[in-house]
Amino acid sequence: MYGLINKAVEGLIRSKFGDEVWHRIRSRAGVPDEPFITSQPYDDAVTYGLVAAASEETGIPVDDLCEAYGRYWNSVYTEEAGYGPLLHGAGRTLPELLRNLNHLHTRVKISYSQLNPPGFTVTDETPRSLNLHYYSDRPGIAPLLTGLLKGLGDHFSLVIDVTRTRVETPAPHDVFHLTWKPREQAPSS
Ligand code: HEM
Image (tube, rainbow, N blue to C red):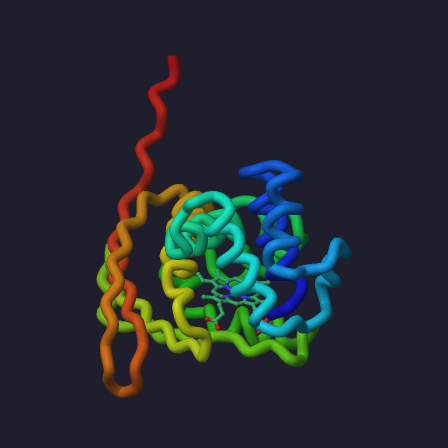
């Protein structure tokens, strides 16, 4: 995956566990002590290795780390890395953004020509729910999407409930069933 993604993994680990733990994880994963280059494609093994090493160092299961990464990506990193406008431009509402995810990644591909993005389709839409179908070549990272979707709840001020099911047709993929409601405003004193 692109350095952009590995940088966000590093950012998450440093912010949650500190610099020393980051260096232990990096070294356990055999990653050199050099900054990731945002626009350089890295072997997926680098990202998988970092997440596995982070799980071993912290005792947090890989699925939970993937979900935390998804939340971090949307709620913190997208803005910091300057991708806020791209995200805002892709949809003014949650369903609009989800219907535009393929288009959003096609736009990312203009800058990152070797991008291998997942594919998405939206079905069964109602005013408060939908199914998001997720097609990816990368095994084991579906919990990342759960975190990304919950992070979008922060972005749109919604409480989003997500359940995931594996289906085998028309091709094996994960289906995320989403329901949402507006976040309650804290009463003003
Ligand atoms: C402006 C915002 C975004 C940018 C710049 C972006 C960029 C990227 C990049 C660079 C990758 C790595 C792919 C590769 O290196 O081959 C990726 C993967 C991914 N993106 Fe996005 N993305 C954005 C928003 C989103 C959103 C909002 C979602 C879903 C809610 C999403 C879902 C995913 C998933 C699940 C992957 C994992 C790759 C896989 O399954 O193969 N992205 N994205």
